[in-house]
Image 1 (cartoon, helix red, strand yellow):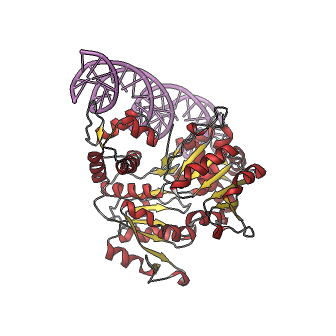
Image 2 (image 1 turned 90 degrees about the horizontal axis):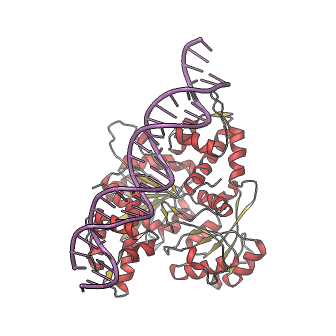
Image 3 (image 1 turned 135 degrees about the vertical axis):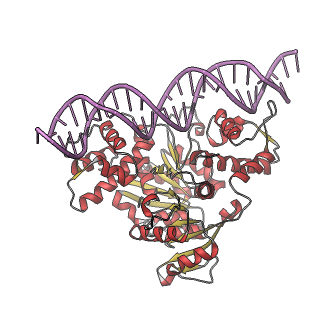
Length: 226
Length: 226
DNA sequence: TAGATTGTTAATCGATTAACAATC
DNA sequence: TAGATTGTTAATCGATTAACAATC
């Protein structure tokens, strides 16, 4: 069962909506409710759910608890998700301090920087020198990292992390980090995934889009349709 | 000529690559160079360029200067692009202070916040009280805004800005802001565009994707393929 | 000229939408 | 039962890929 990025993002969105509905005391939900909430048609919702083997009732919609459990299981919500942030400038440190992710089981466990003035081992989460990146990754089994360094250092820290075993990246630089060609050794079979967040690019495209009047859209990754 | 979001984002990416190539002294570029650089096939590049009426030479590729001029013109790079940031918490103020956008002709001209402690009229850019949002938007003809307020305030500031005439939004909240249903008055014909940046969601999906080993992806708005 | 690259058409692929039988 | 909603199939749409003639 291979789910693509778009589907996984939709599942994560459904989950957030479901959690809100549950907290409001709802027990059941219909495909058109979920569709409205995240901006897709009911048919997409039903197809998504049936693709992950979740069945509803022909008349009574879907049970919210079942949905939360099943979608959460697929997204691995039973596990604690630990993330590091490499580059603790303005954006990096903003993300590092952003505790709201913990509600979703995502924990920022450390930041890394080259600047000695930014190092702070006593902070929570601590900011460590990048020289300790590899050992930290290996010790903690870090799988996912945010890259928020200057463009000029992006490739270096990326390749170091690949070698150290990190497999998922959220890339805030404007360097187009590629997974395939990164292994120096051919014995590196590691597939990795990079999600790009390029704010300048998004703003640039916004200026075009508003002046033409094309329909709404999503991102990346992350985008929603009417 | 209606260009969709994905195409516009690719054009913006081409432009960055072209600027780099030009600064390195290159004069010509081939479709496969551009394709490699942003992670698409040469055929996509040629199709994109021909769709905006840019012709290359059958043997000599494309002229970089022509490309920069033409793509820049389409993206409206001759104009100064002014943006405001509503919500000056950690992420909002990080973006407000991010001067690198200016290289791309994007200027953060003001921030807005409810917290009196964050107001600073003398800063560059200034941080103003949200009560002044509408008047500022109208005075400066603001077209694009970053929304970085807490989720609970997202809809309110969004609707206020819509009414004030803002038409493009970069939404950092996890609220699914929708353009269509926002007008209180039916006489509001304004189409707007929202780009969503939902970092928690992207990290969540990363954890799924790395554990299954699906192929790389893009964002959004903003994502890149092999 | 021979070789390489564009520009475009046709073929493929996947995702979205429409439709509707099954059924609660 | 009648009405409403699911689950799935078929039809549509758009985007991606393949292929190749045109041509520099």
